[in-house]
Image (cartoon, rainbow, N blue to C red; front, side):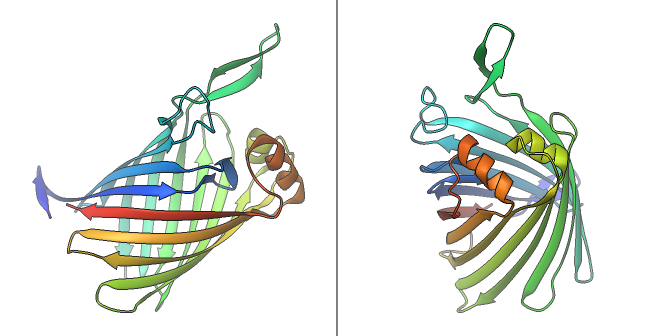
Amino acid sequence: MTAGLGAQAAEGKATAVLASSYNSRGMLLTDEPVFQPAVSLSLSNGLYFTAWGNMDLTGRMCPDANTEFSEVDFTVAYQRSWQEFQLEIGWIEYLYPHQTSQKADGTGSRYYATDGTREIYGKIGAIVGLLQPSVTVYYDFDEVYGFYVMAGLTAERSLTDCLKVNVGALLTYADAKYNRFNFGVDGGGLNDGSLSVGADWKITERLTLSACIQYMRLLNPYIREAAEERYFNNTSGNMIKMVSLAYDF
């Protein structure tokens, strides 16, 4: 449904995702189930806004915060299409309620609330037949002061009027500052890669049920070893299963 917002038409979407674990750019922050709701609003002038959250359902990330939100992200972005190309720029604000980090403060190691951070990003994508290649560059200018680059390729095919299947691949690069902050490893290079397969079933004109399986693995052996100590990563990679329900309004 389209609604008037000032002089602009607006369309919205609400999504609820249940995932077997939470993978954040190659960092498996929990290997137990999470709930990830999101709400987005798109305007006809190209602006859009998104609020997204990750709820720890088992207390795996923080034992004292069972069924609490461990992360909330807000995105403001602008996107435009030109022939088969799509361009996008945006700002992401990351907040980490109910997450703690261990820091040395001169009297020993204590736990503090995890600091939030923010990024700007730019993305270029295209539609070439069934294929949709894209490249996205993120820069954290608050805590990390580092770059993270993501190259993706997806392919989608309709089997019926209501059912679509898709496959995807991601390959990422992170610079030395990013890797030092998140893994304690010096040097930039290839970070993580993933393969996924999924399906979307349009139940009604507004309601869509989706399912996806993703295999993710850190590619750098030094980062892989560090992630196994810091997070819940396995050196052989991790399989993440997701089911979601989306409602357009």
